[in-house]
Amino acid sequence: MQQYLKQYLFFFSVVFIALNSNAQFKDTSKWKALFAVGVNYPTTDGFVNGSYAQSVNFPTVNLGVQHMLKSHYGVKLDYGFNRFKNNADTPDFKINYSRIDAQFVFDPSQYIGFLPSRLRTILHAGPGISFVKPLSTLKENKQTYMNLLGGLEVHYAINEKVSVYTDVSYIYGLTSLDNYDPALRGLGAFNGSVFNLTFGVAVSLSGCQFCD
Image (cartoon, rainbow, N blue to C red):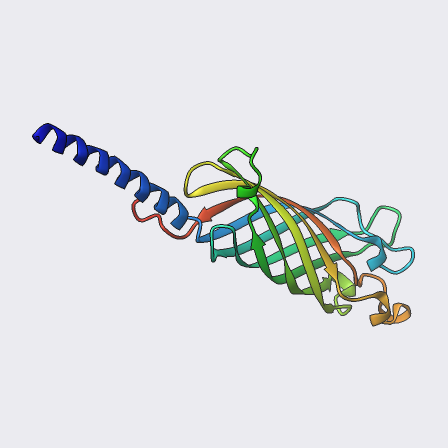
């Protein structure tokens, strides 16, 4: 009898530990901080004729906080900073482009059967505000306008607390060149959209009080 009791206790202990570990892993996904660095490409239609930026510009920096409401969807608030400069055959300019976006996050990984357990895909999209500030003598050509952001992240989990990821995003500017007078303010102003490619780290902010 004692032998069977010990076996039952051992069995339920193992089940309890396994369930607790699984719950802990899910808890670590509820809140995450994200940091990424990469490059950007501003679309040519955001500049006046004869002026456009390099095809690849550095840096792009993204900072965000993500909260998963359920295992497969949640929300994210993030800030992004881009710097881009003129192409070699156009007049000199440098522009700081920053944005703040509130996004809906969807994780379809559980519906994709062939993905390894450590690999996750994240779709994210939402509205925001873009702030454009040319530098040097063009600094008065500031622009502020709404945007819509959409992107795809691919995460690889190092452990239950940390993952590395890459993110491809498109920030569509809800604006046009007609919103300012090119004859007076055109050079160095940017009313357009931006492609971003970044690589970063996501760190859990929750559920780690008993993590190793």
